[in-house]
Amino acid sequence: MTQTSENVTWLTQEAYNKLKAELEYLTGPARAEISAKIAAAREEGDLRENGGYHAAKEEQGKQELRVRQLTQLLENAKVGEAPAADGAVAPGMVVTIAFDGDEDDTLTFLLASREYASADIETYSPQSPLGTGVIGHKVGEDAQYELPNGKKASVKILKAEPYEG
Image 1: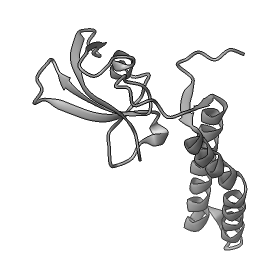
Image 2 (image 1 turned 30 degrees about the horizontal axis):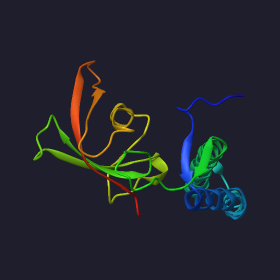
Image 3 (image 1 turned 60 degrees about the vertical axis):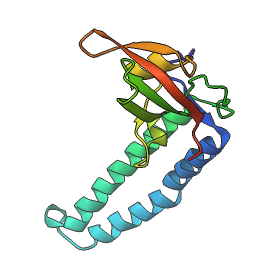
């Protein structure tokens, strides 16, 4: 089976190891913990009015969803080095752009998978319209991407540096 580049998530070895460890925890100790919670709640009696049981089952559902997400992500992951600090935009970089050449109207974001998303910096997917529009462009260059309404927008690349977070 061939994967298209849209399904591939590029990860550093460190990020891959972190996600792999999370998956191992969720499929091992975390599953045992949630099973114990469900068993304890079952022993409390009537399941129709047992808040602890329903909460544990909901937690189990969320946990299993995360297991499926991580499994798919890791199956489609390509492990590589962090991007070079050569000024060219690539996944794994913090990018600052100016909209339509207005250097006062800027946006700084991390170009990465949502697995990297944090409260510290806005994250855009490399597969998003903005992501695909800026990848490969160098600092100082203009790039175009398609807006949801079908029109084109132009941005200028002001900075592109490897993410250190």
